[in-house]
Image 1 (cartoon, rainbow, N blue to C red):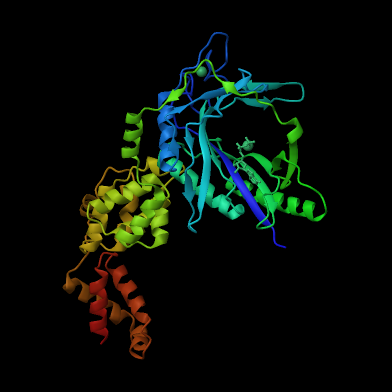
Image 2 (image 1 turned 30 degrees about the vertical axis):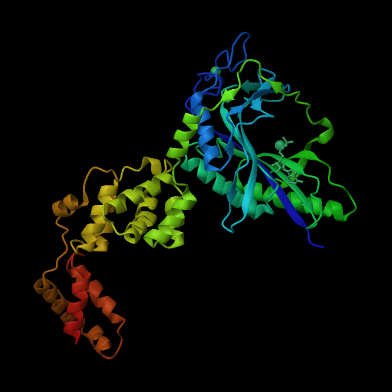
Length: 468
Ligand code: ADP
Ligand code: MG
Ligand code: ZN
């Protein structure tokens, strides 16, 4: 009988605040160890947490976009365990009363993946293993705001899990709730995997901890599914445990079993009042909720007539989508703008990404208009494109200054055509004998003779006339 894979995901997304969840330390990544710390996040005696209101806003934005039920009142709880990277000896999280429940996300197939809940919590610090004799702890990350987004076990394989994660990450990035940076750990996930036979009750799950790349998540699931199937087929039983993925060996290995699972002794944190989200805030955030990438993609296809591929590329990055919309708002044809953006614009980006693009929509719109009006050829437009990238000069000014205006003077074109025909009698014979492909050769020669500035439509017409 066939096997079915069942997956539920717990995603930790770092909220894009300037400061931490319960103190005013900066969240800046890559600082010297323990530079971003204070008595609160170091848990010095007497220090008290105070909730970051901006973190709450970002968390609520995410919950609205994911269709959750935002709770008017929720409770922060202490999750007790002892580990050197956890200075208080407990993590402040939400347990019985999270701020958001339900909601979900729809995949391309139309399948709806339900969410159990989203809760807010603080991150832990980081142990640095300095050698065999001792370890060091960096508390810069301690108390960084996170949301944990918990899905129902609705996913049915590595591919669906990958699509769900990509969609979720894209939404959080579009909302500017999370920067999505997986290398820096801003978006990471625990994967719960089990196998069963369709129709039977769910199998025992194994939890794969903290995997931070799409590739490794896929590999870890594939490996784990195979391991569980073989185990059951060999008469064994899957035990509920936490396993770690070893990317080098491409295997998973046991970290701790259910028996040594922590008893977290959760209880409401007496230092923090219940979190009350007032109706006015919720109303405002609902009103301000931006169009999500997926809805945007659909609109580009249905209303602007773009191919789904183009629409997907343009909406994948909110900066690019905004650039595109500003360009067409200035009158540029959507498909022409899309071609330029998917080609030259995306190619010009460095690792700072589209957020750092200095090129302006007005420049691209004008460039497209110059081609459309026959002032310059597409070739010339590509040649001057790099001059536009610093955002300082309009294309028309560059064209004027460099004398690149397209030649539409038929007298000059006819003269160049005559010259080319005279110099290439062999090809003329070939063309007249029926080799029509040679027209391209003639066009190229004429363009070359005219410094690339001739109007290509007029050149084609003149050649056809001259060649009979
Ligand atoms: P814990 O904190 O113990 O990990 P949670 O309730 O936070 O428990 O998360 C449980 C996760 O495991 C959810 O994402 C849920 O969808 C998933 N899950 C539960 N049962 C199964 C199962 N049989 N197979 C796969 N995933 C499961
Ligand atoms: Mg878990
Ligand atoms: Zn601090």
